[in-house]
Image (tube, rainbow, N blue to C red; front, side, top):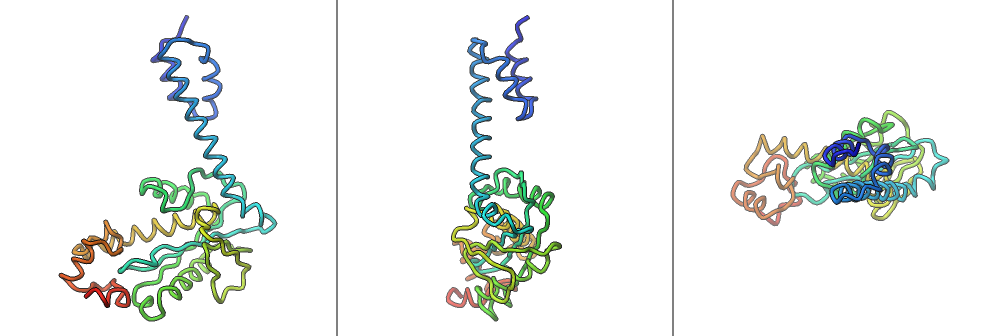
Length: 252
C-alpha cells in the first residue's frame, strides 16, 4: 500500500540526520510531486550538514597542526572598543574530537545561535576560563594591557593546564606557555572561535545586567558601544560608574 504524502512528511520530520539518507532512498523513486519536493528539501538539508562538517574540519587546521600537544587552548577577547563596561577574555580547551557544529567567529553568528553554542561549549569543553577587567583598570593601564590581563586571568582560571595557546592575533606578555598568534584566528581556529563565543556571551550578559541598574544608556541594546543613542545619553546624563573615562573624555 502506497504511503500518503503526509505520512512520508511526518516520517522525514521525525528522523534524525543519521536516518535521513535511509528514508530518502526508500522514497526517491516515488514520482508524486509532493514526495519529489519533500525528498529535494531533505536532500538539501543533508548537503548543508555535510558542508558544515567540512567547514568545521577546515577550522581544525591549527588544532591538527599542533595535535601532539595534549591540551590546545584557544584565546579570544571581546570589548576593546566600547565606551563602557569591561573587557572580557575567554580561554577554551576543546576535546580532541570536538563534534560541535556551527562554531564560528562570534561576530558572524546571531545572538540566538551564540547562546545555543555557549551552552554546548560549556557542556563539552575540557576546560573554560573567563577573565574580566573593569573600566577603572582599563583607564589605569590602557585597553591593550587590560586585554592582556583579562587573557592571563582566563588562562589561570582553567581547571586543566594548557600545553599551547592559539591566540587571536596577539602574543600575551608574561606567559611561559608556547603561543601561536593567528591573524583572524576566530575565523580559522575552532578553539579560538569557541573562546570568542564564550567571551561575547559572557560580556553581553553582563551589559544586560548593567542596563537593569542604569537603564539611561540602553546598554542592553548597544552593549556599551558608541551608538548615537548611547552618546546622546552620555551627553545628557554624564558618565556612569562603568564608563571608561579615557574613552569618553572627548565626548562630554
